[in-house]
Length: 122
Image (cartoon, rainbow, N blue to C red; front, top):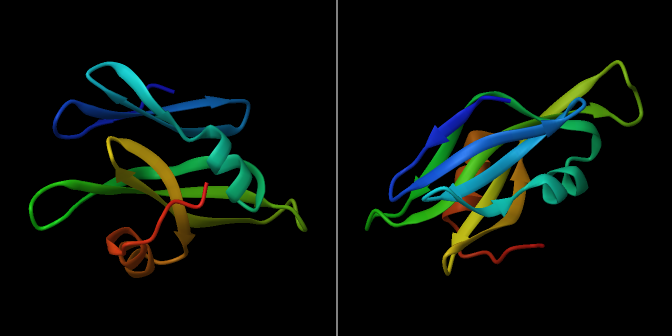
């Protein structure tokens, strides 16, 4: 997967994958600091979770500090393999690290989660 997305302050997101699954790896100055594989596979709610689309969102607060990352993940419905669904995964950035926060179906809902003071679930 050759896709990547540069951020500010030396951060970069790379898409990694195996078979039909894909996930995000966050690096800073070339060093891996977070791998979302386990979180995405555990929280997708379906089979073969993968990064959907070509857009992800870096969320910053009013002081221009990084607070979250939002990305759409799609998966195969576990009850009906002919159907798929997608949802937005929100990853919190706090104390120099990323962690899984929650998911939502809409951009507005994901923004609300990202901008909240919620703690990481995993």
